[in-house]
Length: 207
Image 1 (tube, rainbow, N blue to C red):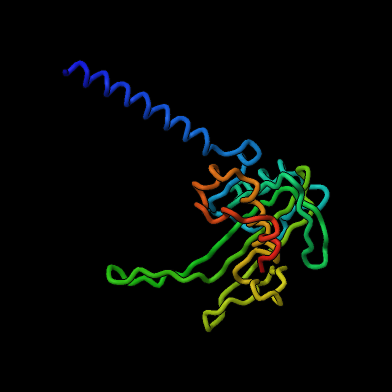
Image 2: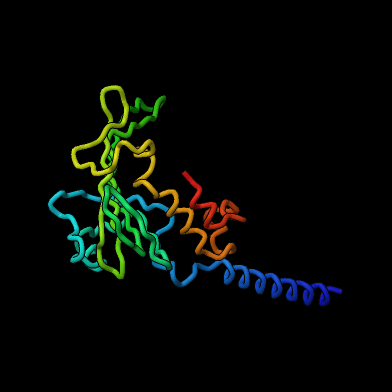
């Protein structure tokens, strides 16, 4: 009896191990996106207005030297995207973000632990074939009323109603199209079923 139980336990363990391996294989990151940084990394990016990429000259490998802290996020597009930002139209197949944030400590421990964002700077770099084709600086600071206003280095179009919440006009669309590239099983671990049933047309209809 005991021997039967042991054999059954071993068989169950082997089946469980096999199912876990198959599950892991089905949810693995596709090769095209293995270098992407999907979940935002919190890095100590140090912005320098004199250290910006040169469009058409700076290569992706140069960015590692220019910004050793590494990017906050990185997205790859199998089919190049065409977009217009600040009246500049270009195609890109990769987007790399570098973010810097400053906060003010309003805490009064141990009763109150509170922080307030006072500055945010996002450098978004667009590349095609590993060469920089465009970059945009979204810089905002808080005023005396604790409202976001454009910062000194801002290039973001503030006439866009979403200029505070999005990195550039069209970023929501790009994010939607990005996830449609992924197999459902692979993207599920990151965004659940949010993109299920969604088509490219649905993404294009997003505001």
